[in-house]
Amino acid sequence: MKVTRNRGFTLIELLVVIAILALLITLLLPAIQSVYAAARRLQCQAKEKEIALATNAYHDAYKRFPPSNHTKKSGTNELRDGYSFLVDLLPYMAQEALWKRMDVTEQLTETERAASASEQANYPLEVLRQAMPMYRCPASATTPYVDETATPADLQAITNYKAVCASTKKAYQLSAGKSTTKTIYDTKKESNSADGVIYPGSRTSQSSVSDGVTNTFLLTESEEQKYARWIVGQECGVYTMVDGQTFNDPTTGSGTNAISYVHPTGFEAGKFGPDSTVKNKMQNLNRDYTATPEYKWTDLISATSKITFKNNTSSSEQTQYGPSGKHAGGVVNHAYAGGAVVAVNKDVDVAVYFFLTTRANGDPAVEPD
Image (cartoon, rainbow, N blue to C red; front, side, top):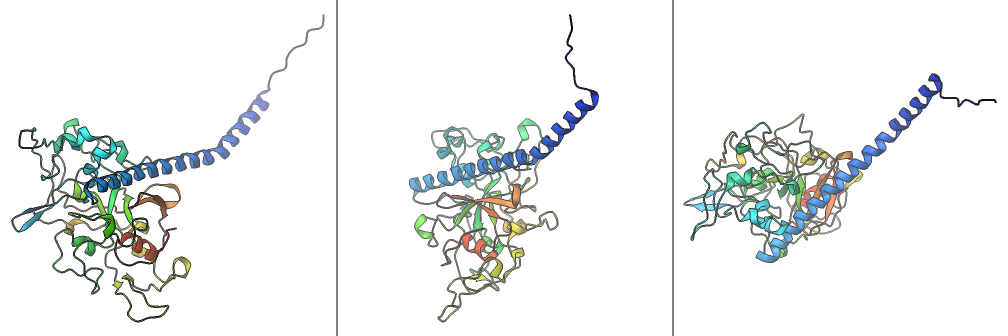
């Protein structure tokens, strides 16, 4: 009887098969990583949209948007040690029980207070330890806490989503109690407040966003690690333009070149993108924070508004990151005040980014890249 033997792979054939599989994996890996990156960006957009919709639900209840930071008068001073807008939104994000652990009318301190017949409970330290996945971008390189090595009792949770409070530091200063005049943009245009939708102490309504809630940013992402504690109002806002830039007054006169709104120096009506003469280095989204980390925040905080918790320095210290993110392609997700979310490229035209920041500047209708 003739016996037939099954022939197996030779060593060389096996090595060839392994090499082919390795090559296929190498070719597929970028595609797989791209899919994961796109999924993280979409997850981030979903979270940002949920926050924006919660902000609108708050508006429906109170007829105004929440301030980015609660403030409180104390004699001639205006204290800025208040809770953030993210705390205000907790009841609209299925977190009412946690919200009841805080008294948003009070300053942020290390003092914890049980509820009484006349006072609401206030447990800032307890709530500060609560990591909030809904306030964290899945693509972020930050860690959930300021200091991961801290003891469980001293953990301080951060957020990756912040309010777009103003276009410039000078505009933000109007709501931070540091400006001695009402002049913003380094021009003669005057205002009583910062120029974003929500900012410290704001009481903005949808009707006062005359540029339109569908054309004005409410939120953005930030890679700030240290000064991004989600309950601390002073640490939950950003401004969008690089410090030291100048902006022009509305152009008087008539004709196609007349500009009736404040605009970046060098901007010409209707010229955006490749046709624009305005440089992108004027906006913080395109900033190389590694090379120039001084996203100036220190002088926005008054001497009476230093928020200190255990094992952490005062929030009047220097922050590093403003609008920023870790998504593929250099995009950063932004939410409009109306609730829509868009991925903005870091090289977006600076005039477009400026116009989308301001709430009542009479801007032209524009779309980000």
